Length: 198
Image (cartoon, rainbow, N blue to C red; front, side, top):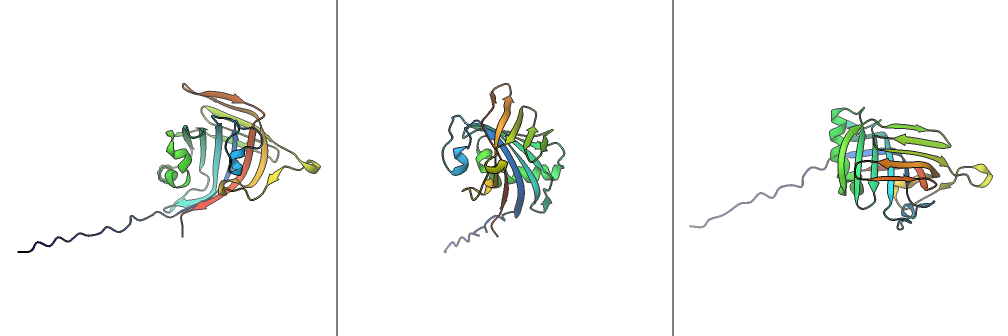
């Protein structure tokens, strides 16, 4: 008798569809202008930063993400804490958590925590302030020729498009295990569009 074994080859797991258009603001401990944003290495290690990501429009697997805000506090290549606005719904929270390794892989890799928290942000053409439970940033736009804001086009990463140069006025983080305070360091605002392959 011959024994025949039939194996079913599983199809690839369904990849969720996602896309987002976001406004990004960040300050870090690098000098102005941060070499990382140009594809280089930090001017100061460890690079310590705070980034706020405000999703202007987007979806993850059918869940609307418009209005979702994330605050990422990080020590580059070592750790990050990701806070999501306490105004999000449970569905949005789960969608963003599932999206972390896809859209925010660098921060997700060393993530210490992902929690809901109050996040605030105020922005004008010349000043940006944002804060969360352990971190706060205030930065002012840097002006160039004719007093206009310094802008940089076509940086290597999709995160840094429509890039406007800022300088920190105050950039702080205080927790039980980490703390820093910087001023006069790099800051920026940018636009970011990303999504799953079509």
